[in-house]
Image 1 (cartoon, rainbow, N blue to C red):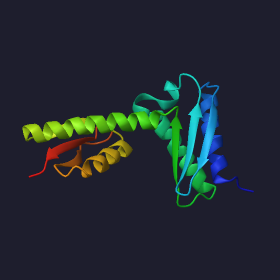
Image 2: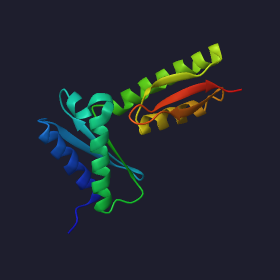
Image 3: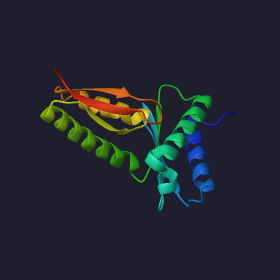
Length: 151
């Protein structure tokens, strides 16, 4: 019998955390459109990885395993002690600063390289401003966002 998708997500996150040597607990939230697995513990930097690369990889693995277990119509998010919210706030601050600079000086401003998920977040965040437009440039892993004034 196949495991429930939510328990598969929990199992993947727990196994990776154990393999990395963390004594951490996993909290699962099962919403209508998303399963969120949050790792709680001390010094989870290695689990998050440089620029979130490790946590993004774990999230992808958990999502794929949950799909195989029958997950339908939901996203899977893996977080560690609020990393996702902190990263979102930092990206939104950078995006606002770049947009202000682009408008003030009338020229395009390039942001640092980001993951596809982070670029999407910034695109959507700045779309609401109306005074700037965004597009991505470059090739992975150096693909980055450009913020330009409208007009």
